[in-house]
Structures are given as C-alpha cells and as structure tokens.
Length: 477
Figure (tube, rainbow, N blue to C red):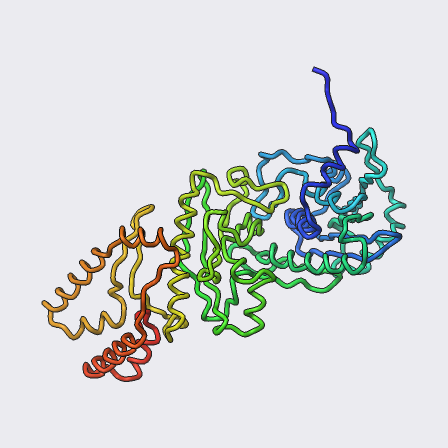
C-alpha cells in the first residue's frame, strides 16, 4: 500500500486547536521537568518583545544530549503503552511538549544541557510547508541568543551543566496581544501551577524531594485545596482504597472549616475564585499531579450543604486508559465497572457532610480533636455497612458503670436491637424522594433534655469539669 503522510503545515495548524489554555499548556511542560527529576523549576516571561512577548519554562533536571533532544522534538515521541519511569513520570503520549507549546506560540525552541554540553532545536511554524523541517541551532547561535542570555541571568539556579529551557516565541493567542492581558493570564497561570503541583512543593511521606517553583524569580507557594492543616476544625474523614484493573486507587475525604471557624483570609483563600459550592467534589490526582478538580463526574448535584466536602482520589499512571485521561491531562472518566463504587463513596461522604452542616446550630465537639461519635459505622465486607451504638462513647460507659451486671446486659441488648431495627428501607425511600431531608429538631426540648442529663450526671457523682468536657466532645450534645 502507498504511504499517505499528512501535510505538515496543515496538521500542525490543526494541532494548535486541541483546547489548551495558557495555564494548562505551561503545566504540560512542567510535567516534563518533573519527569526529568528537576528540583527547581522557573517560569520566565516578558511582555512585548519585537512584536511578540516570550515565555520560557526552565528546569535543572537531567537534561538531554543532542540525540535525545532531537527525538523528543518528534510529534508522538513516546509509545502510548510504554512503561512509566516511576512516581514522577507524568508523560503520556509524547505529544505534550510540542502540542502544548504550539497551542500558544508559532516558534518553539528547546535548549538542553547534559554533562556540560548543550544542544538546541527549533520548530518555527512559519517555516514549515511541505516537509517536517526542524532547525538545529549552532554553538554560536546558542552563545549569542539574546533571550537565552537574559533568561540565564534571571535564573536562581545554574543550568550550564544539566537542565532544559523550553522557549516560546511568537505567542499569538488573544491573551498575549497586550501586556495587560498577558500579565493577567500569567497571574492565572501562577495560581494554576500552585494548585496542580502543590503536592510536589510540600513534603509528603514516601517522597524525598520537594521541588521549588518560581515565576520571574518570585516564589510560587503551594495552594492545597483541602483546607489549613493546623485548623482543628478541618475534619479528615475515613480514608479507604479499592482495586481497579489490578491497581490500587486511594481516596481521602475532607470537610473544610466553616466560616465561623476560620480566619477571614483563610476562608476566602480556600473558597477559590468559584466559591465553596462550585469547588466541592473529587480532586483527581495522577502520580500526585492534579488532573481534574471539583467534580462529581456528573453523577451528583452540587449542594449547599455539601459545599465544604472535597475528596482527594489518587490513581496511578497505569490506569490512564481506564480512566480516559485526555492528552491535555485535564479530564478523567471513572471506568464503568467502578462507577457504582465511586457513587457509594460520594453518597457516604455527602451524608456525613450534610450531618455536619445540620449540626452547626449546636455547640458540639465537631470542633474538638477527640470528638466521639455516637454511632459506629463499620464495613465488614464490600458494599455491606454495619451501624451500631458506639459503646466507647463516654456517656454510654458512664451509664453502664452505674448499673449492676443484669442492668448492663439489659442496656447493651436493648441498644443493639434498637440499632438493628433502624428503618433503612423507609429512610432510603424518603431520601430518594427528597435529597434535602433532615430530622426535625425541637431546640427547646433538646435544651431541656441536655439540662436533665447534666443534672443526672451530677447526681451520679461525676465532677462538673468532667461533664463539661464530656458534652463538648460528644456528638449527641
């Protein structure tokens, strides 16, 4: 059969419209820097320069020799099923550096150093017509490259021994047509980098290296979406994991602090541009790199009462195909065989979030580190849950200590039967008909019951300070 190669100029113009934004294109280049074991990554840019602004992503990673760089400039330089190179390997198709770059600019030049030797190649779309003609820069071209010299003077780290600089010139998208719009786009890119790569900027168990990021020498600080670690009112719910196509997927739900439990600055920071309601949902990470954020995968509605709920989910790169991760690494779809499991995770976490929201009128121990739940929820096997009265609850233990042997047994059996007789079917039916269902609380009666409980506990000899601590740390009070 005769070959039918594509027309280079037409294909490249088509590849420019794959849906990248400036910030997602920059993130795709950063992926390569992390894969190359960089410990420092710098994003340098300037405004209008000879009619066009320029932008460069620089790293002190392993770098490439001439042949490696030449091969990496090829479109589709990596096999889709090629084995990954560890937890820092963020590559996918071997298209990212090229397609992300030309989506924003018409001239891409890559400089790379390895063992003190430098090589450089350039794609200039204005010079490509009938053939895939790439330009190699001579040693003299590199030495006198005006923008390269400016970049090297600005870097906080040395790049003369090893490392890579990806330079974009002739930026021609709308955001680069004026200094004002370009600076606005770069501010968005800064926030995007801080969020997408926040786990690489922080120490994390099992990972030794922390990567430093800067933009025009200004440090980029991590922007975790899961609330302030030092705030005791941030709740870390039960974590778990499941198997997908032989690989482990982990998830960890968080409930962020309410406004009343946060400083104004923290509350605004973690709300993000879109606000809490829109930023609830799954945050999907692939090898610690954020792929998709604030999504319920179109399976659940974003509710007001669940606005503080965010679930971190970690998938390995080996599941790219099963989770349908796209070329831009910005969208995922859970495989059909685990969608019911994902829905179960969401429903359980949402129920906890709604309960937390509905209890906000109470002065209870959802604010305490040693908060004691009234119910125990166990999962003896997949898709099976067991709800029972928590016998480790301090009030239960205190009441039990006041009873004789027969009284203790009677209390234990009665509460066990009471828990087992909960009308699950009726509750599930009501929930299906009304997702906003909640218990009706008579606050006056509840306050009376609380006062009576305190009085009875005092009669049993429990010290007042102990009663106060008990109530503050108790879900039912």
